[in-house]
Structures are given as C-alpha cells and as structure tokens.
Amino acid sequence: EDSRSILSVYEYLLGQMGCNFIPCEDGLIAWNKLHEITSTIDLIISDIHMPNMDGKEFARRVRESSNFDQIPLLMASTVNDIDEIKELLTLGANDYVTKPFSHEEFAARISAHLRTRSLMKEQERLNQQLSNMNEILEDKVAQRTQELREANIDTIFMLALASDAKDTDTGN
Image 1 (cartoon, one colour):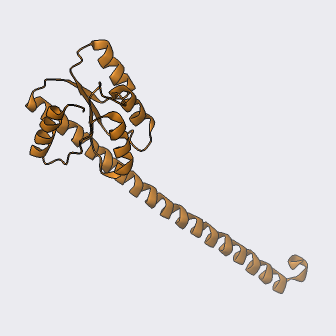
Image 2 (cartoon, one colour; image 1 turned 60 degrees about the horizontal axis):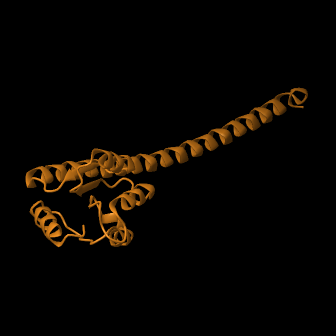
Image 3 (cartoon, one colour; image 1 turned 60 degrees about the vertical axis):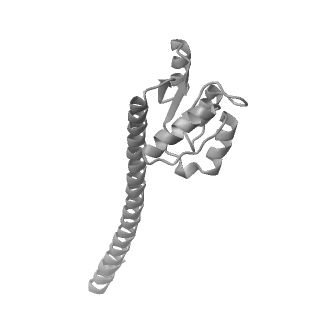
C-alpha cells in the first residue's frame, strides 16, 4: 500500500485484531520482505496501483512461488471495474475489497482468511505427521519381510538337514 493513511488504518484495524502488521510501500518492497520472513506470514493485503511493482505483478509472483502460493491474498483498491477485479481473482487473489471499506466488513474478511490459513497450516501439519507415520510403517514392513525371508530360508535349510539325515537319497 502506497498511501500512508491507509497503512495507518490497516495498522490500527489489524492491531485491534491482535495481528502483527508489516507495512510495505510498494509491491517490490513487499516481494523482498516476503523472502526475508516467509514462515511467519499468514495473510497478504495488497493495493493494485503502486510504484515499482503493481498489485497485479505482485499477485502473479506470489501465486507462482511455491513458498507463498498458500498464503491468502486480499486485494484492496478504489478500482471498481468488474473486469479488473475478475483479472485479479484469476491471477490468484482470494478476495477483493473496494476502498473505502467498512471496518467491520474488513475485519470479518480478515478473520475468515486467517481461519482458512490456520486450517491449512493444521492440514499441512497433519499431512506431515501422516507422512512420518507412513515412513515408520514402511520401515517396519520391510523389516518384517526380511525376518520372514530369513525364517523361510532357515526352515528350508532345517528341512533339508532333516531329510538328509533320514534318507540320503531324498536329501540329495
């Protein structure tokens, strides 16, 4: 967001919600900041018209990056053109808010996106846990398979010894 007054509004509203806020004056600064602090970002709010890198290019880069493609992206701007809004949503924005916006609506949208992000993080954690358990089970299956193979070889060897001891023709 390149407007100082809007940055102040964001800081106030997000502070009221207990969120940490990292202001960036343009898309290029935000893009560089994302690379510095990837793991702690749960939501991105971006304007469309900014210097150095506009919101469309910023949204494109965010969605093309596997590091950021799961972070909810909320676009906020004075643009009220339906074709431009559709383009932003097609580029990967999760939501769009027209400025000026109602503080209550903005807070509700932020809360909804943060809930979604929290659920996504929990799903990622559970998927990782499931993957770890799967690896453990695969190792146990491989270990048991090897034990069965060795037991089968031992059984065949013992049967051969028994048959050899009882009858040398059968043993041969």
